[in-house]
Amino acid sequence: MTASNNKLRMMIVTALFAAIIGILAQVTIPLPLVPITGQTLAIGLAATILGARYGTLSILVYLAIGAAGMPVFAQMSGGLGSLFGPTGGYLFGFIPTAFVIGYYLEKMGFTIRNAVVANILGMFVALGFGTVWLKIFAELSWAGAFMGGFAPFILVGIIKAVLAAWIGISVRNRLASAKLLHGLETRNHSSL
Figure 1 (cartoon, helix red, strand yellow):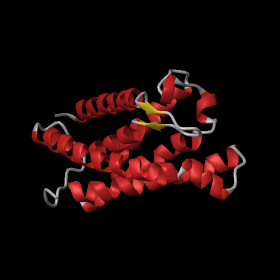
Figure 2 (spheres, rainbow, N blue to C red; figure 1 turned 90 degrees about the vertical axis):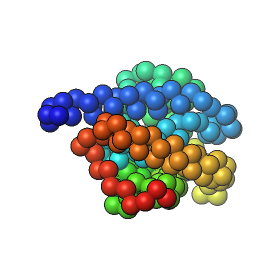
Figure 3 (cartoon, rainbow, N blue to C red; figure 1 turned 60 degrees about the vertical axis):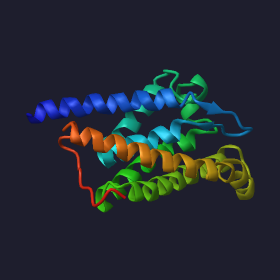
């Protein structure tokens, strides 16, 4: 496969993951300040399957599409108002989240155990960014921001992290077996 074919393939896969994130963002459980969405599951999947570079790039494409006004954010929202609204910290936090997950896996190996650790770390990154943003945006106390933007999402975040790890590594292994991950770091240390 030529370098240009591989680059085109990865651009298509990156765009596909941006679309998957937009679709899963519509799976929503409403809560008072910040809803629980499938968005973070999709972020974890993208980073687990694609690694740091292409996982992060898929998030950037997703955010750019949403910033341009396409209704890809939670509850069919989009535009700069969504990026700079109360949940904007979570959206911006997805960038380092994807990088942390992908980077950890590239260094430690693409195994389910490592993916669970990476996705839990990523969950804390996203929640941290979102909580700080919520504190500033909504002029909350640190305790109020923590209780409204962090604490309610820990348990469901861990569940989504485990799902993203398990599904992501399974899909990644199948793509690698089909030789569809050419050009990506594919080091596996073990099945667990």
